[in-house]
Image (cartoon, rainbow over all chains, first blue to last red; front, side, top):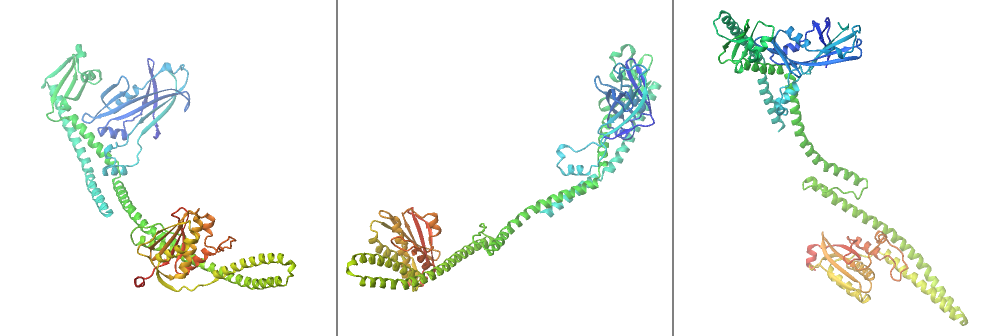
Length: 175
Length: 451
């Protein structure tokens, strides 16, 4: 799995009640292979990870993970997002930026769990990972030992199956 | 077979490659269809919206006071920030809904899209794009080439395996034969090959084994005869020297006895008797040595082996009256072409030995038959049998001091058998004791008939 750093983005934080949210200007993930796959009518799973660090590249203070499933309405040309978890939540008819924002809004950490005072600096690492972004194997188990299955297997290109990116920013202080 | 399989594989791959050739067409067609369907959807959506705003189509109203009874999609729209929304509904998405927020709640306008099920089209499009994507992500040229090479390689390897096996089966006995001949030439006289099949190679192996066996026997006989020749020469010289010395000794002793005064005559008589007795013993040994060294004439003639056996046993019986004799003779009477005196000597020696080994109350059996162009006579006794040491040195000439015989009998018998073109061998005794087999040359058919 390749992890490429995101650059030229600015992370900001805000708190709503006890929840720490992160906002990322220019943090776009509906692009490239993800966008291509969505526009082919297929859904894409994206796993987000927000990590609070006490120092740059430093020890992890707290971490949260959240998975989302994105899909694209071919005729309406709008996106839909479902939050994987309990209880599942979803929203549809979104533009790409709105879909991205909704994902980040639903990625939160409880402020109280950090144990920071208002003067304590901390850093945040925001990362996402798209598993199995490559083309799906069309080979059924029954076709594994047929001529077609053999051709499929021997003609596959070696491609990056997963896609991952991350961005680090800081120092932050609780508002 | 491998050529046929290669052609079949190539043809199958060619057929499949023709199937994959439509990928580009499928790609283009799906893109065109996507654009067309989207245009259709958007035209219907815009048309419904226009008609709704113009009041040309009736709405289903959902009042705010009753939100709990609203359908899920209407509630989701109400909770969204959008003022209006279009979405598909009905089985397979065959209806188009236009939802609009009003002061009183939500108005929903609906249009039937006929038989066009938009959600099913979405699914079909997704599957098509997935197939196209899967095919475009592959290097089909490489896939076909590798498949062809792999399958053809496997087919040829599978085909070669039995060929290699057959080649190995054919060459293995030949290699074995070559190794056997090489070993035999290097002096490995006991080397034999595993029996082959009924083909030419198998027959060659059998011929090799027969030849090796005959050569071994011939060599053994040659070595034995050579040894015998040396021993005979030594015996002849020894007998001559002893005879030369014994005669003057005997004459001198007798002269000494004649000149002795009568007063000491008794003592001298006894002493001379002892010396003369020992001289006679030595003379007997000298005669045995002479016999051993003698090269008797063969004088070959044709005779009935059974008759000779009966005669020899009859002569032997008075000397060993307490021994039982039995016969198992070939009723056809094997005809022998050999020197009668030599054969008599051989049989006498073997029968004497057998009777002595069997002892009083024991038994001796004589067997005759024909085998492989030879007349065979076997003599078995019920004695204690032979020790391993005796088996090893059985036919070697030895000097013993037993009362009867000099230990040269079997050596002489075997030498004579070899001179006749036959041999004497030790066999498994049928009466529990020793067993000897004498092979003698059979008489030719014409000679045998004239007897």
